[in-house]
Length: 346
Ligand SMILES: Cc1cc2nc3c(=O)[nH]c(=O)nc-3n(C[C@H](O)[C@H](O)[C@H](O)COP(=O)(O)O)c2cc1C
Image 1 (spheres, helix red, strand yellow):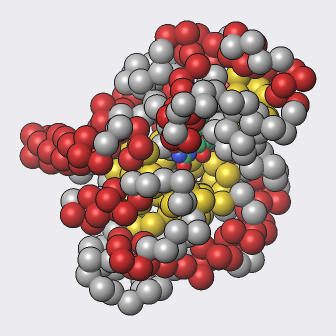
Image 2: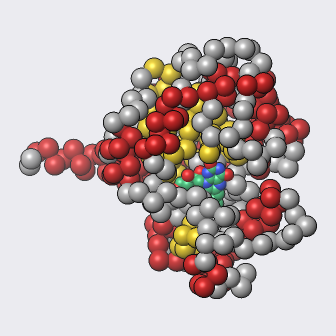
Image 3: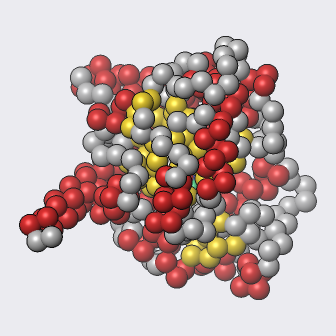
């Protein structure tokens, strides 16, 4: 795993606690319209989507690598901060914080440069995938930022806890992207035994009812990926959005053939690229171009082979983020109300 020792510009100690989070809920929790994080989506989430999420009271995030260069990534961060601060001045309302996803792995040559941009601009939430590194956590904590880390099993949760992260994103079976294999009920129970800070549940959460269920299971936040592909502000092309509307859970294929690591993809998009069942059942990664770097080959593959989770089954529209958040909120509230009515009987 990559060493990030040289990264920490403030030279703070490892494993220090962030000054922005106490116990399981972060300070901004009560300012949100619903406890939902729109997950970072490779090639799909850009500044427009993030800004609209934050203006509407949910956490918006994007992968730093969605811009081809670190300089371009910095411009996106500046744009998001400027537009959100303008929004706060104009409306007197508080925008939700935004987050940036960093891939902490030696196949990502930009990790140091992109982290420096996060520190320079005090990005409120850094979402790490693959490596949980205490030096990175120290760098983000030095300015009061929070680090949330992706995991698919208890062992990863323990390692991330040792690195001092503020929250864990529990990626369960059926999630879009590199989904896990565990049922969310068991994943959350296992992780609770070893981690008592913020818990964020990910995988097939597409409605406000699903989000309420995630909280009922003990999560602090619901993390929604596939649902946000089908918004007006997402960068996904129309064919992708239509395929999500026309698909259900049986149209999702979990295969390592595209990335070398298992991820969920829409079957019709695999078929459209001539990838047969025999190929996707093979654990060997398909070669998308010998002349390309690993990062370019990955981008080329994900541009035409479309990832989505089992949650497609509940997605039948492509609203604006504002419309979607209103709908999620109303479903969330009525679901909790309905459940509390059970108290009259039991
Ligand atoms: C198209 C697509 C791209 C994704 N890209 C990333 C990424 O770049 N970084 C990351 O941490 N997670 C990525 N994910 C995973 C999501 O952040 C999130 O964990 C997942 O979508 C949640 O499950 P759901 O799609 O069932 O809601 C991606 C997911 C999808 C569907």
